[in-house]
Length: 137
Image 1 (cartoon, rainbow, N blue to C red):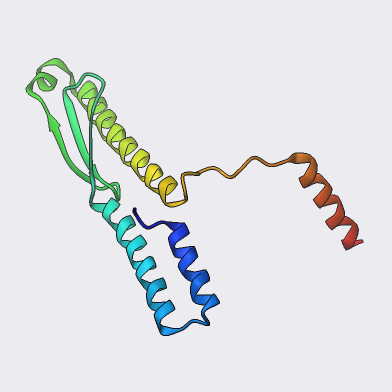
Image 2: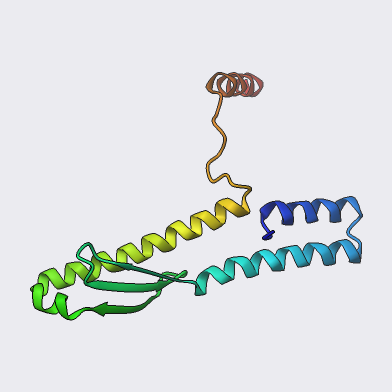
């Protein structure tokens, strides 16, 4: 099981409950370090994609650094300068899109599978806002 936000949160709560003993702080530090290592691994992961014609391929890292662009001989023969530039742009954006999807998946997994907050009950929120406003009067 990969470390996530819940693991760090649980270790922090345990440390507090145990009065921040050296052992509990060590466990907390290990949880934080494992989580940091997990996130850092994403920055060196590589993501590859092609343009819509399949003739240009780009590769980026998890920190969005462009690593390579491969232009096939078919692209050079079949596309003019503007078309070749557009094919490169598409391939780079597609690779960065894959990178973004992967990071979102990892963040969702580390947050217990939820990237979006739970739905808000508008009536309850409005009632709380009214009570808060009344207290300020």
